[in-house]
Structures are given as structure tokens and as C-alpha cells.
Image (cartoon, rainbow, N blue to C red; front, side):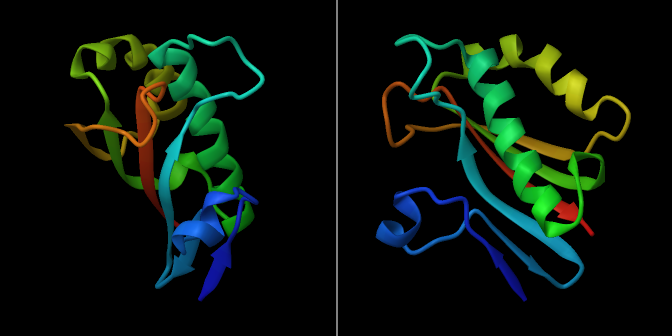
Length: 122
């Protein structure tokens, strides 16, 4: 088993890591797309794009990629924002779409609009 850490200050506080590689799969923890250097108000699509880039980096470190994603869960602070993310999802998953679920949920920070969790084959 391999554990992948992103360097987030929350990893040691909450006792988790960005991803775990085990049993032929990479399991990426829920990942948000807030850019602390970005504008105060960031669109759901922008957050989706940044979250997927963070997920892709973890998958790369695990030895796989978004093209091998088999399962994705999207947590939306407001389900109405999900449609604005569809073009971003098309950019990343159109050729190899994974099984997916969308859940409306209260996220840890009110500025967060989307959190993405991915499982990918190695």
C-alpha cells in the first residue's frame, strides 16, 4: 500500500492523505478547487477545473491518470451549479467516462462549490 500526501495542512489535522494506492486502484480523497491566490468569488466550473488538476496530480503520483478513472463522486454545495461543470467534465472524461454520482452536500467552507472524489485503476 502506498500513501500520497499533498502537503495540505488538513492532512495531519484530520488524519487523512490525498490518495491511497491499494489492490490495483488509486483512491483519491475528496478534493476541492478553491484557489487561495485567486479571486474571492470563484465559479463552480473554475473550482471543478482546479480540483480535477489536483486529482490528476495525485493520480499521476500513484502511477495512473484520469483516463483510468472508474468511479467519480461529485459533492455540490448547490446542485444548480453542477450543469456549469459539465464542459469541464467533458474535457477530462469524454473519451473514458467513469461511473459517477452527484450529491448535494454542505461543504467544509462556504466558498467551496464542489468536491471531487475519484477511484482509478492502475
